[in-house]
Image (cartoon, rainbow, N blue to C red; front, top):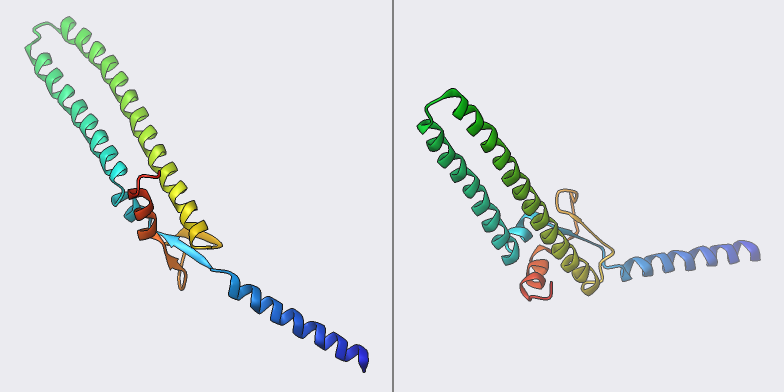
Length: 152
């Protein structure tokens, strides 16, 4: 009988410890990445830069089309097409490099701010808002505030 009482006492103590540990855990946060990105001034500026480069490429093609129409021989047109294709490819590569670089910078800054919010709010994890069905804490606005503070 003593062994049974001791086992019951240990199980009860274990249950209380488990419940106590759950009470200490802050839980799971979730983030709406698009909302954070839209509210982040650095990201907004990066989008403007990327859009400006895209418009620059479009204008380049419009200008080249006008030049192409003014050429009079098939040989000149063929040479012009080849040269334009090379120039456009270089511009396209530079555009993709810029876009990738800006996206990476934005992601790294958002991730750093999110990690800081995780620590500040004593959360166990932060996931994308599309993963949460019920529960969790939306930290999107907290991350935006961190980003706007200029620390990242």
